[in-house]
Image 1 (cartoon, rainbow, N blue to C red):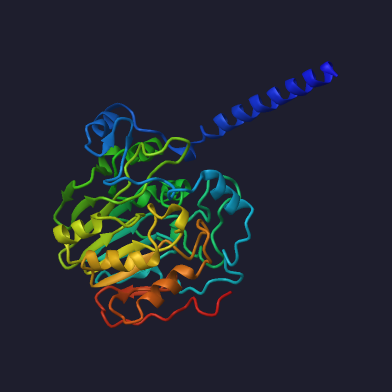
Image 2: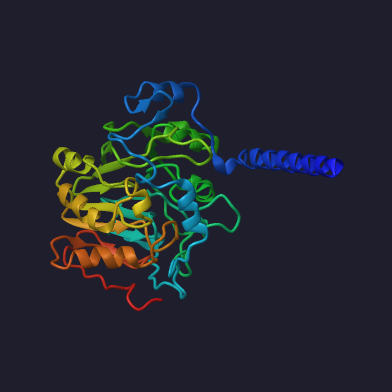
Length: 372
């Protein structure tokens, strides 16, 4: 009996050791990027938003809502029955040929989730591109919805300005970033995110890493990095790089690039400092009452847009990946229902549909209606 228990214990220890070795080896894959060090870390440590060992939000922001445990969240995510998390049929789309856009066209094209392309004043802008079909480091994990992954790196023209709002897998995609490297002229990101990009072979000279309230400009655009209420991390360590939103101002337009953010006081502050905005692009999806501080509910998105003084609102962060616990189409249904009086102009294109930035009368159909 003692011999059997001893052999079982040895077997368990061997298994645990091999598992740990496997995890450590897996985390060394290049997809996980590289944490800041050297001059990058020295600059981070001087930031007023870096508290002791990690970045922090402006106001207290727990990862989970009070009274909720990670064990209960995992149980709900893995065991509880969740209905209509993914569409059972292909999402409708209209694939705009970005390579044949006229130089004078002022357009926005959405790729699903938080990835989108803009052309304004003859310049091209790309935000958080994810074209790998996945938002997870695990093989086969978090796959794109059927019909949502119609674009690839080959469909992009040269990109004058690339924005990375934070380093989560559904916003900073390793395979995409490698593929578009020859097309990118300049990159904007939060402090520390440049460490990933440089590790993946990007020239440090084209990367502008920004703390909140930093400003950068050239003859074409002005860019401000502004706060968000979220977190960061690609591996086991959190908040070593900064999550951010951006104010993009061209000669004719001012646009708020929201990234991921829970609702907080920063929207009103940004609205007072930088508003009004011609367009606010805000996350609307992958929310849950269990993590209400780091993702907005649809009703809060409308409040944030109002505080930003936005003339139009484009709700993103939906219709491609199932990262929350809600039905796939609930974000668009809820925000539309909450905006029944049309107090806020909503931009709700299909994936790939051409949004005419200067056309304030352009109408968008509720394309998600009738899709199971």
